[in-house]
Amino acid sequence: MTESTPNHLPELAAKLNSPIIIGGKTIPNRLWLAPMAGLTHSAFRQVLAHYGSCGLAFTEMCSAKAVPTENPRVSSVFKWHEWELPSLVCQLVGATPEELVIAAKRVEHEGFFGVDINMGCSARGMIKRKAGAALLKTPEKAVAIVEAVRKAVSIPVFVKFRTGWSKEIEPAVALAKNFEAAGADCLVFHPRVAPDKRTRPPFIDHIRFIKEAVSIPVFGNGNVTTPQHCQDMLERTGCDGVSIGRMAMAQPWLFAQWTTGFTPDKDIFKDYIIRLATALEQDFDPIRAIKRFRLLMAYFAANFRFGHSLLATFSRAKTMDDVRLLAEEYIKPDMQLSQTPNMNLYNL
Ligand SMILES: Cc1cc2nc3c(=O)[nH]c(=O)nc-3n(C[C@H](O)[C@H](O)[C@H](O)COP(=O)(O)O)c2cc1C
Image (cartoon, rainbow, N blue to C red):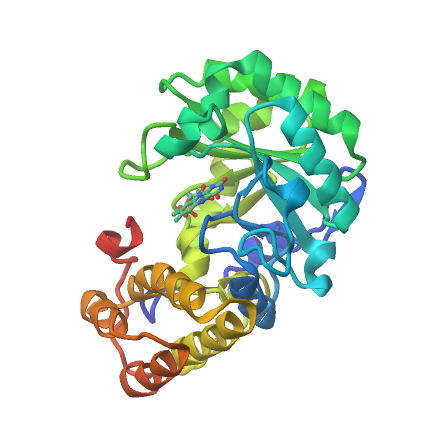
């Protein structure tokens, strides 16, 4: 994130810009937005679309139990803009084939590009419900879910999963093969064990084991914050593309920067926050809007050397008008960027 870091590597851009076919549908590039609860909501995605060049975006996880009866006008999670459906995948989290099938049918009916099954979330509540990463403890059930969803819908089926509950990669490799046999169209692999909440670095080379085990596309994910990291992940693992989580919150223009050479001007940080405030205001009631703003602000603040004080300043904001005023006053073009994201904020 320093001035001297080359933010556009032509070789990387060429690789990322080659279209990829998933389940018979073409996606223009191989740099995608990872699903993140509370963060990859419709308002953030609107800002992301403004900066452009994200090949495929994923919603935050939506409860499979809730989706069949959710009203997108009221729901804060199962919510989207009509124009984004051709490049938006809805992520579902659930515990049984039955609940996931009904939810996946609704996702298809609404017109999403595809459906993604969450087998990575290790939040306590999710594990208690036997959903998310808990499914990696019961591989037969995990595969039965993929098989059932595959039979129920004709849109592309994605699975996002982790290494599992121990650091050996063999169970994840076996699962990957079974997901492919069950009809998954694409795997997104995050090479961390389930109880690890991003405190240790991901084991990037494990992505290669998954890639080599299957013939469907495999995307890698985890700790990619620079074009160099992205290139390194692609080269070391042979994966077909990369999915970006937290760094997309810090700098949503990175998709354009890494794939097209777009050069942001120094006002882009302020521009981002003001756009975000407007989008949050349009999509959410004032209380939900400010909650979501606060969640995202930690990743934004991680851009800066004095991110903690910026975060403290913005924590005073109670409305989107406050956010805009603070942005005008405190987000300056000459703010010192942190060389790498400030991990105390980035790992919150
Ligand atoms: C706040 C937060 C919420 C997340 N929510 C989800 C989620 O809903 N579904 C999911 O599959 N992964 C979720 N993740 C994991 C991310 O998709 C991604 O795998 C992880 O952040 C590592 O990628 P990164 O280093 O690029 O951020 C979440 C991560 C964070 C930080």
